[in-house]
Length: 219
Image 1 (cartoon, rainbow, N blue to C red):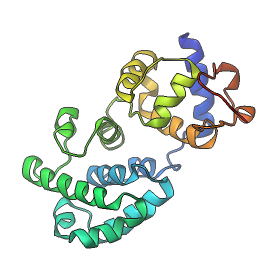
Image 2 (image 1 turned 30 degrees about the horizontal axis):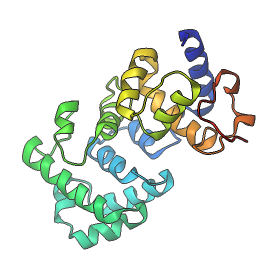
Image 3 (image 1 turned 180 degrees about the vertical axis):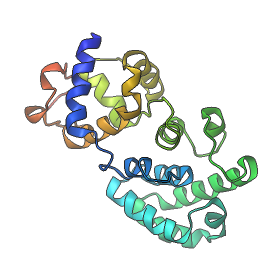
Image 4 (image 1 turned 45 degrees about the vertical axis):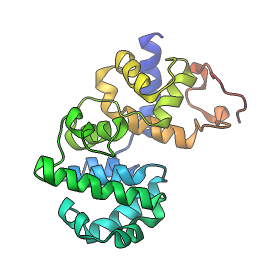
């Protein structure tokens, strides 16, 4: 894949979709005082949830508890009630409790800024770890979610089967200067235009660059 074409695509999408105000996590990234714990918890709440729900649930939770100690003090029932609308609230409540417990026990209540240490926390996977490193600590990593995995494969940039493979390949072909914003751009583009089923190819700003790999139907 020609680097010039990748740069062109990123430039086009950046103009339309890169904004620090678009998502909950982006707003938290540019906050005057970034809070790694809130970013981690918001990321965990965002799994399988719409961003607008994540924002409301996160705000509701942080009004009551915004430290590992305060999360642990909440009864499971109270915590589940607070995060109910994020979906999968039973599992997420258990995860939030486990994560808070581990942070207190192993990391002096602080969110670590190293991938291996983040991986040691039960409930924190590659995507969550990279989002924390990227959004909370400005580390040069590429968080890969379903959009960041699907779209580069659809474009024909890469040919991978798992997000982990995608992360490796993207780090090889994406210019380092674009690593921090890649996730924010492709998440918005994936929600707005390049949807999983029937993408809006007719109004896609990068349609001419797309190989439409595995696209059966489009609008």
